[in-house]
Every structure is written in C-alpha cells, then in structure tokens.
Image (cartoon, rainbow over all chains, first blue to last red; front, side):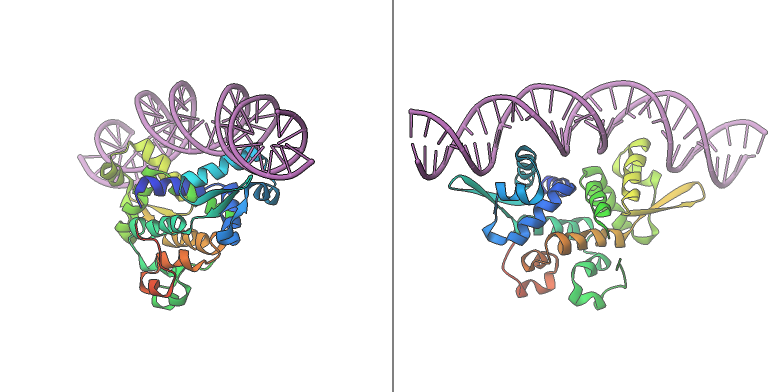
Length: 116
Length: 116
DNA sequence: TCCATATCTCAACTACTCATGACATGTTGA
DNA sequence: TCAACATGTCATGAGTAGTTGAGATATGGA
C-alpha cells in the first residue's frame, strides 16, 4: 500500500460521518447496505451521503455494486487493514509498545501500556 | 480513548508532513529530537514545523519538553496505540480479517488476506 | 545587560472540506 | 412511454487547513 493511498484513507477516516459509515458497513458484512438504507440509518441527506461514500470508495475503504435500482455498499476490509498495517509498520516501525494495543492476546509480551 | 480524540489523531496523521514527523519521532525514541533538528531533517521552515508539531501535540500523538533553549519532541506511543486500537475495536469491530494485518505472528489463524 | 540562538505566534493568502439544495441520470413497474 | 423511486452530480457558500514571512518571546553565554 503506497503512501498517498494511506494518506487518503486516513483523511477519509478522520471525519465523524465517515467513521460512522465505516462501522455500519463493517457490521453489515459482505452483504453490505443500500445507499438509501444507510441514509435512513444515519440520518444524512442523499447528497451528503453520496459525497462521503464517494470519498470512502475513492480511498479504497468501501466498495459498491448496483443491484436493481439500489447501489449496495460494503466495507473493503483489505483496504482498512492495509491502512492500519501501514501505520503500524511504516509509521510506528513495528514498535512493540504500539503493537501491544492491537493484539490483546499478547499484551503480556509487551511493555505495560495504554489502557484508557 | 474517546471519539473526538481519535478523530483529531486521524486528522493529524492524514498529512504527509505530519506522517514524516511521526516516523522521525518514533525512530528517535524516548530521547526525542529538538525542533531545530527536526526542521533541518525534514527541510521545513520553523513556522511550518511549529504548526504541524502543534497539531500532533494537541492530538496527543507527541509530547514536548524544554531543555535549555531547545524544545525536545518525542512520540507518544500510547496515543498512537490508542488511535490504532480504536480503529480496530470500535470501527472494525475487531474483525479477524482486519486484525490479521497487524499481527504478523498470528496471520495463519486468520482469513487469508491483504498483502500489497 | 546585550546579543545570538531557538522557537513560537500572528496576519495574509490560497486551497481544500463539507453541507445544502437544485437538478440530472438510471431503473422499475404500471 | 410515463411516473415514481434511488442515487449521483453540480454550483454555491461557509468554514477550516496549510504555507509564508515578519515579528515576538524565551534562553544562555559574553
């Protein structure tokens, strides 16, 4: 995953509406959700929703497919994972203290830290 | 870690200059680096550097301390870890496919995925 | 005290982000 | 074919981010 893509992903995730969108789509799983249903769920106008979905899709964090008259959106877990992975490896240099946070099963191996 | 803090962290990280800063400070370790040295290393003007350091510090991703006439900056690994942890847990709902990416030692346990 | 060094703050400007409403496009069923 | 529905695109305007250069503040040594 290249740097500009990671920057786009982080920028996409740094917005409350889009963070809500991501969570909703992760929960929805591979089946995804129709745009209209998402709008109702989150209380966004169609154009606002379309704007944010477009940013997430361009960042490679979600995917879309047309089914009849609906457009179904679903989370792209590889994109999400790739972004987090980049942060851990290329930005945090795989520092054990940072790694400990995302690997609950192995926290004891690492330096004591970060519970908030 | 609360949501607004995570949003601030993600926003802070979604900028090339600040991502460079973070990496530099993670590598520098607990000793940290003086602002002047960082500026030389990354080729930023003093005011530009101060601006970005301020954003990272406000987001809880770095810390500063004054030593003589220098201000020494160092990475706040707990802040960084907390942000990544939030993404994994509250946004990705601890999905195994996303988790796999940040736990090289246990990738085999998870669904095959994301190498790019 | 005075000067050089290190860093921060401020104003001004450009560029970008985001929300809104109007309109366009594409799809389905009568 | 036409109306209703689902979604996307566009123009606009407010607000915010980022860069620059000038100047302010703080520190240490002569």
